[in-house]
Image (tube, rainbow, N blue to C red; front, top):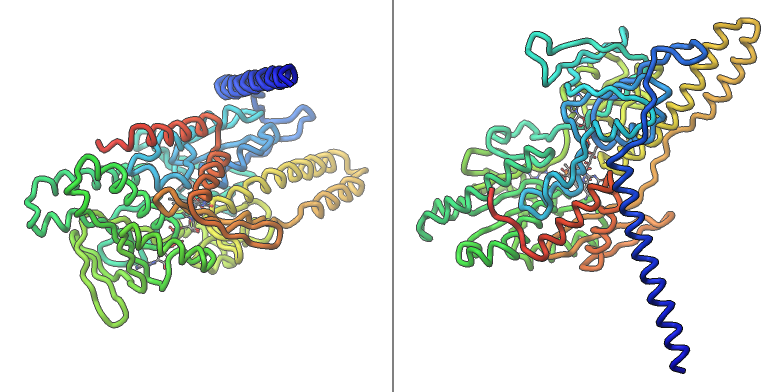
Length: 499
Ligand code: FAD
Ligand code: NAI
């Protein structure tokens, strides 16, 4: 009946308007809250009951440390964050930045704005931890902003959290440090962008028959883990979707080569997804060289072993993504304790306590080695969350210890409470949600954990899922909006090809 249709239409219109209003209200509220954090409690040396406020030093501003900081009740400790990087970096979207799919500013969040939103004051030092003395409970730090003579100071701690991540490994292969770019931090992405754009412009000045032009236009990525694969995919997208319009002839000469030592790329994914990714790379004309191990690098040529044969691959830009190695500060800490006898990372127990300094140091994220825990953002993030809850219990334990020391008549009562709380600190349990990777041409692969089972999915729909998962994972609402706008900008205007 027309009147019924009219009524339904009216309700649909009203509910549509209400949703738009609610959406706008929510967005405005989130933006207002991010711009105007609630007042912070100033920190004093003691609590109201006279007990001393313990000092918690957190090293690093990456996935592990920032996840801890975001979840920690910072009123319980005198919290000091030390990191040479004054921002958090959302690494999953870093491979999209050198070619301009995502702007660098969209995936960083300043430490100070994260610290300012914590309930109690947090001190931040833009400095690098050089050395930890677990016996004296001190960390020697080197400020990046002070004059040379004031640059190094010693910080005392009661509790220390080491979340310094890892550095790219080269396996000691000659020439890698001098000639390759890594893809770990913002300056790396900027360096790759400059090299790619400069090579394209340099090649354009040379004759098409000049072998130097061919070399300049060969972009080689070494390491078929997710970093190498995602970057190779982004590079090929840039060539096919943007450069082909502005430099049609030259874009056909560009070649992306991905070199992997093992028989397959993306070895942590299900076999069906590996096959899918390798087939897509073939279609996209990415030159996939598996079973090929790089042995030497000069400024213009990579020498690789493929079975018994040796191959020289001339290159213009080389991106090196062969995994992680411990940082200097972690290596120095390892030498201080007998229990630290692995070269793969700091050894921890199932409560993330550092072996050899269980009472005062925790270590989280890529700087650690523990069987079954991989160097991923997912692991570091969950470890940071877990540690925030442990530190809340630790505060209560310390309070009971102090009360017991003030009132010896009741010490057995407090001791019982302490033991109950200590047994309440359960081991860290990692919950694997699955793995995602972008493989180019607006396609992604997903190996998803649902309960005990794993489900695989690949293609364009998975790409939409990949996008929404990463948007949801962004640290702040501001990051989420900026990343979404970057994707819209690229689909309307394409990628920017200036340096
Ligand atoms: P980081 O996040 O590396 O943070 C380490 C922090 O310590 C940094 O702030 C650094 O400045 C600081 N630091 C360094 N040296 C010192 C020092 N001497 N003193 C004090 N501070 C120091 N994982 C996923 O799960 N999903 C993904 O999609 C994904 N994509 C990735 C893409 C790329 C390109 C890369 C490189 C990694 C990716 N990862 C991903 C892995 C993930 O980024 C790491 O596992 C994660 O960052 C580890 O967190 P972390 O806190 O241990 O270290
Ligand atoms: P990786 O360790 O995962 O892969 C490195 C690859 O380089 C390996 O496949 C190895 O066989 C190869 N390799 C090593 N030496 C070589 C040589 N000389 N010549 C040729 N190939 C060589 O390293 P990656 O990709 O940097 O990842 C580091 C960590 O970050 C991993 O734990 C990974 O899971 C995580 N990560 C996760 C992502 C995701 O989930 N989408 C994205 C990026 C990283």
